[in-house]
Length: 505
Ligand SMILES: Cc1cc2nc3c(=O)[nH]c(=O)nc-3n(C[C@H](O)[C@H](O)[C@H](O)COP(=O)(O)OP(=O)(O)OC[C@H]3O[C@@H](n4cnc5c(N)ncnc54)[C@H](O)[C@@H]3O)c2cc1C
Image (tube, rainbow, N blue to C red; front, side):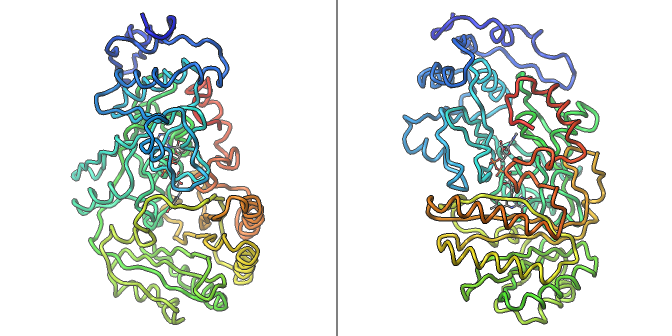
């Protein structure tokens, strides 16, 4: 008999009767937990707040004994450990979770989901913690922090990397490079593999090899009913469709098998910085550079506050080849005599760390919004964006780190997939744009967000103003995030998460 409350037969049965586990061969059986069975906690009421109150801190602490030995349950009484556990990349995302639970196995995750379900407590899943709006944080619910599930190993002969659901990209890049391989990642090494991959994943290698999500070969998923399944091209294909773009809405992904590619040890790249008044020349250079159609070349065009205090342009260059070839490719920019040229040859792993500080998390309030630009770029449009940034810098001095970043790549890799191949549907040549609104004083929030909304519209006037990239819109996109696949995903959501345990579509 449970020491806390009455019997919840459904959950007790799930753990004590293997008939509760689906018989699909790709489903792993969950072992009955050691006694006592904490899933016998009987909900007193169906409302979220009462339930959260009903599950006391001590009960959550005791729950740890039903998990693997290394798993952790962190609550407010843990002081600085709790403060660290709810910290996120953006200060906007810090929320007071009732508990942060760090599982070490998929079975642990399954037990946590069933506990949350039986007490109608909301759950959030955290990998790298980079969602600026707090999609991996919870106000009063349970955070499943996958940080202890960060193992990475390579099968070099098959060119695949097996990655734990809580790994960061730098973990993957390090292991892959030991075998002369690389994976399509984002351009910052401390972003979570799961968050970025499950919802898209634009990076320097995407022009050549497609998005990170296009390189997902298989995933182990813990579903809302607690079952643990594999999804790939053969097994649970509809789930595989759904998690490749809408992952966080369908389950907790505890393992990812990622396709790797042969990688030369050194690449060429780094920043070239130009003052805002050179915008016409820079845009012309970018269009000329892009017209060469070289999939090995990529550039991040960053619009942000320059050294003179005015909005300027930085081109973060990337060339997956020799310096000799890179200098030819990027000649249109180099001929403009940038104010800063910090380009060089460097190991592949290094290029995705160039804009990082020592700390993974910032001390800033940051929100993201998504936009896109259709090449060729229009110089007058870029001028309007720079002017808009200047007006913000003037109006809100604490917003000076605000800017936007357009990833300029050839579309070849992205167009290898069709819109209906997976939940992620945006298959076109447009440059993805992430707009990062950044402010230091909480009282400036509404002003900066209002500016961000206007700026977002302005950006996408030169792109597709319907399309939204979930990872840059903090998953608020709805139909605009999934386009042609939205209705199919609504149906699949009913099948895989009928009670809405995970994020809504
Ligand atoms: C500094 C920085 C640089 C970035 N650079 C790029 C870039 O180059 N390219 C690009 O495409 N994007 C980029 N992004 C956006 C990034 O892809 C998203 O913010 C991404 O969602 C972050 O993933 P995460 O795991 O770090 O974050 P988290 O906040 O931990 O997770 C993000 C979302 O994914 C869900 N999730 C995480 N792990 C799992 C899991 N295992 N199972 C189920 N759901 C899960 C969370 O619940 C949450 O909804 C960048 C973001 C930042 C802050």
